[in-house]
Length: 466
Ligand code: OOG
Ligand code: NI
Image 1 (spheres, rainbow, N blue to C red):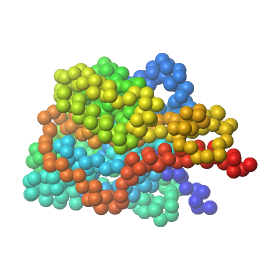
Image 2 (cartoon, rainbow, N blue to C red):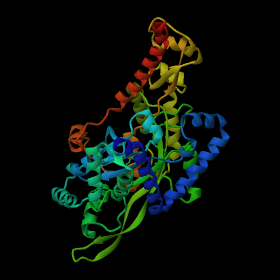
Image 3 (cartoon, rainbow, N blue to C red):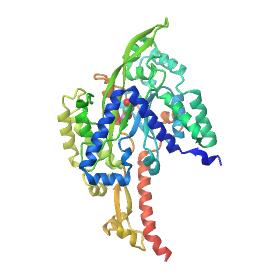
Image 4 (spheres, protein in one colour):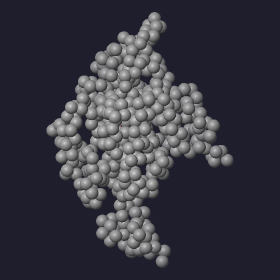
């Protein structure tokens, strides 16, 4: 009886992402403006392309097309990370992928907590790019120790949020009343606090070491630093942002514009300078400012195999050797041209991508396949050649470290570039997390293999049944 009264994890996640969207729009009005622009461009794109509209209507919910797809937070301690993992699990969000951003001059490593599986993603795809600060990369030993001490003092979860997470773990879910309380209590963790935890002097020391350290250590909690709706035409939104009074980052991150979109393209408006106050030793509040929060948009394409990803990385690097995008946008055109040129060697038809083994596809029976029976298990190329099986791109649901670094950098201010020795440490991250992260390539390969298996089973089952 009890189990029937549980709200599904997918529904809790939907309620949470909706509540977060409302909160963030109130906190950051420019984000509301971006949402309006995205909705308008999505509407225009759909009116101009009835075929696209029809396709999306069949596969996605058109009325939710402009909703948030992801957000991001930055945590300070292993204990915060492992508790966050338990909180997300109540909402059906699990750690997928490991991203080392030290190579890009950002002292964090990260994962994405997201729904896994088609049904959950369709119901609500909301995910949170979650980073853990790496104090081990800070050279100044005393600053490192002071930061650790400040972080050890703070409690980012409300007691009720912790209690309800434990209850969900114990009972296997939450009923309606508890689920509603859970969403509003967890939202508190993501809220903005304009009163810093530290003195103006300490803030300055943290900020001088790295702006990101100041962002994580100085505040009561890991405020959501951006939300990201889906756009159907990222180039158009990027172009229109200034007209709407918001300043876009210099370039769109990721692959160039293509007929067959691959991976993920994203861009953002630059983080806003916001008023905060610091608490000095004598208990007085002192006015200052902090820059951390922004709005982002994303457009997703096909998930690439390790071979496709290697080619993507190679072409991206090749184009960046020709033109490295400047933060002020002064060479954005040249960068776009170099990127487009470099990617000419990446096939731009679905069949070409599939034949070269660059992308993951989901296979299904054609009309003919539905009516046909075969006695042997053939390979998928033969089934396609016989017209029995068709293929659709599997959408990339994860992130890209070079792009993430570009998003971080554009929001840390120009000239914030700093070098750290590359030091990926997935083992350490997983120990701190209290779980292993899912390998995204294995995951996509599994979806593809299962779709092939189900085609073969259907095609040969009819024979067995005879
Ligand atoms: C996260 C930046 C990464 C993305 O979309 O790649 C990210 C952050 O700024 O905390 O959200
Ligand atoms: Ni993002």
